[in-house]
Length: 416
Image 1 (tube, rainbow, N blue to C red):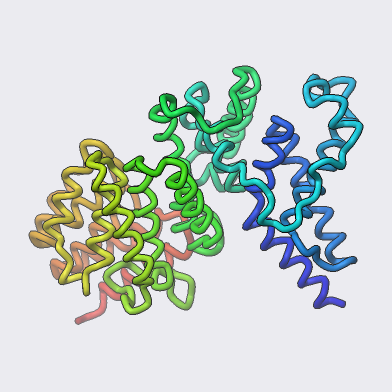
Image 2 (tube, one colour):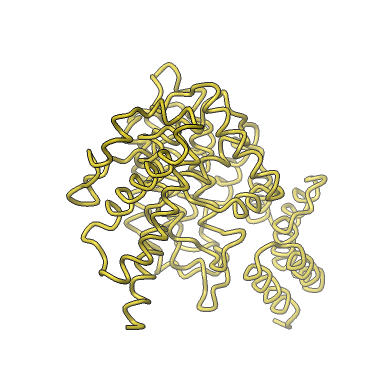
């Protein structure tokens, strides 16, 4: 009996991880109400815990969740129909007959509404910081706390952004659709940012106990693939997909047996997914053929050089440094500036890299301090390297990353 309870719970949790955003998107598409959709889907997960444990799992778990959430949404509408204008807009037919289009033969038969939902969340009428937050909450299913940590904001601030974005969609009557071609340029940058942020939160989680959240990595790649299938000749969408594939190809080697992060130079390259590397390279080549370079394509080119090199020492660091120089005027993020400095250190010697890091005024992030430790260690300055790693461990947010940096400090202090 206990084993059956545990099996039902695991199935619900797995289905929720994999399909929460899809279920919410379907409900938003039907009811045009974000809060109602999220509340109804949450109700459905609670129902699933009880029902699947008692009756066994359904043949189509996602279809069951969507159908149950739709019934729950209609119940909620009925309870508030005298006070809520949405009940009138949904229509008497929906409220009086909850059965049409309620069941699907299989999970694959459910329409995938997530791209429409992403473009709705990324409408230019919504503040940029709110677009990403709302999409991460609604489509990717991140908690408000996780989103706040990812952006370095308070949970209250992030919740307010999400609420304002939902209100803006309602008051501005933002349509739930993929925009026409002439509208795409002003929307794509936010869509790319959303997908990239979902991936980076999965690739190096800020809050989750696991350093890598595979569910978010897979979801981001799937969303990038959907975008590329819609926009077959959009170079930056292809560049984004290539970048995600090339990074994900190294997933198996990025975390050790204790769950701690393993840096590129120490990763076992035999465990890399070389089919995925080849696929990423092909997608990047498609993007390059369109002759419209952008930041994601440049980052993907850097990732490709790292992924295709036989070793760290045989990597073309001079070319990587050149790509960073091209990237920085259009994507001057802290990680890009640090990456450029490290590439200089690998190409021209650690002292040159340390000098480049010194020019990054005002940036004292744990990543920069750790990069300094890396270059100090390569320069043979063990005591300074040890101090840098210890300092980085104190300021990093993730406990597993802090433990890795403490190990680096210990290793740097040992005689070689």
